[in-house]
Image (cartoon, rainbow, N blue to C red; front, side, top):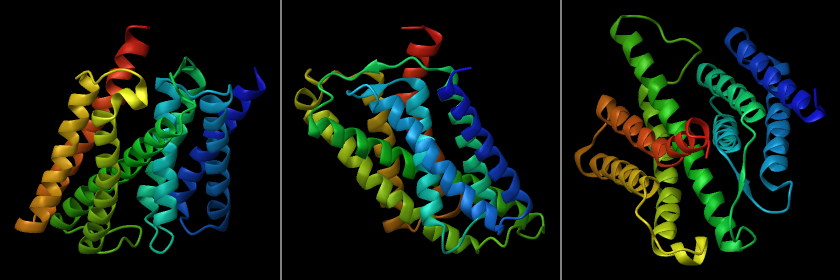
Length: 261
């Protein structure tokens, strides 16, 4: 077993242990220490995979791992004041799976013109948008579950904040994620030749990204003018993120994993 694979498996196991402990004793000191350690080690693995050869190299494995690492990092930073153990455990569990995917799906391809600062900035903004909107989607799923518990007369677990507080957090996350997604989509559409060296081509990636942008934009407009909330907001959030997944990871999964190109 190579040292890199051994480290990768150890990081995945660490995430898994953190997820399990968060379900049992969410306030444990060990969790608060080991989760940042897992995030740091995961980030180092991503850096080695994407930038270790000098240029930027992307593939399905390290792209998925980067998005879920950013999701875990953003949620950990944002939830310091009001941690939600259940959602944090989900995020840690998904990050553990992403590390495993990264360990076994190692194929990558170099991004042309990857030394250009504009392209690097575009990629960073795109991944940050993915991470924030992934947090929003998971947040929406958690809110749906808590709402169903309330309708059944069950008590909220994990000392979760009220649904209105969660809803405010959800829209703050969506607003910031939408701003970054706007930068990513419009820079990719209007400056395609400068960023990628080729004129714009309306591929599945571009179409799904624009559809996702329209859904999140429509949700924010509906929230502002019509006061959308509750299940309407949750369904729009999950739909928008599903389209965003299809925009890049979906097509990349089909091309690289299923078709082997």
